[in-house]
Image (tube, rainbow, N blue to C red; front, side):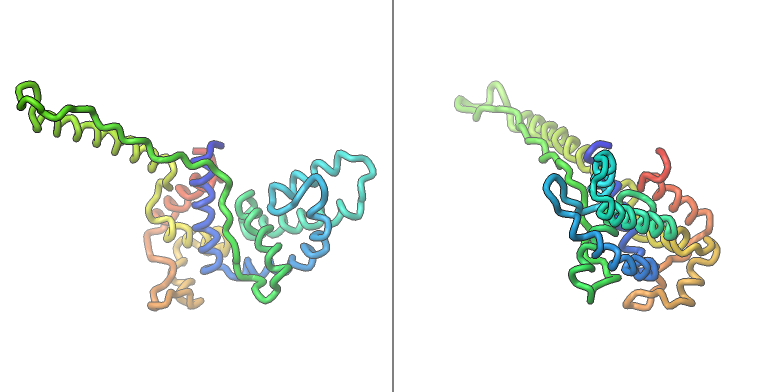
Length: 248
């Protein structure tokens, strides 16, 4: 996966995880129940040779230590227990993917230190990516008409400058589109996704169920906008691809 794809995917998951906070707080309450298990494993997460801080580093540490015969079985057991508990949580709430599991691991680390915030997301850490700078603008060279305008004129110079600017603008747009998410209504789509996938609600009853459960914003608007089931299904399918759950 290249850097721009990783960035787009994580930002799509960020929309989903914020929707979990809005629509399905019960999933966060369930995750908070793993804090004691995390605390048991925590003393072993920072040792010479490794530092476990997210899902990927947890997986790598377990894989490495399993290859060392006789290595502190009690320590390994605690890490395995945490991994299995996170996998169970992810499967239960349809969040069994590296991005939400990494987010869950990071928040468990903070909740273990600040128990008053357990169940409330405190961090949304994105991937380490190399975002390229904007391409340089290279205007065409031109000389001022020292001896008048026999060999050039301002309209010709302006035309060249405009062409150079339009070309540069196209490069900037291509870079933007490479890193930007393809859908402009992801906040709405993410809430539909969470209501259907995480809460298990029928596509036909999303808005009605949200209204009954009091899922409204500060202005009293229902958080799940009403739409035809086919439109909701299409939005969820598109988001699945953006999240990396199905191939493009």
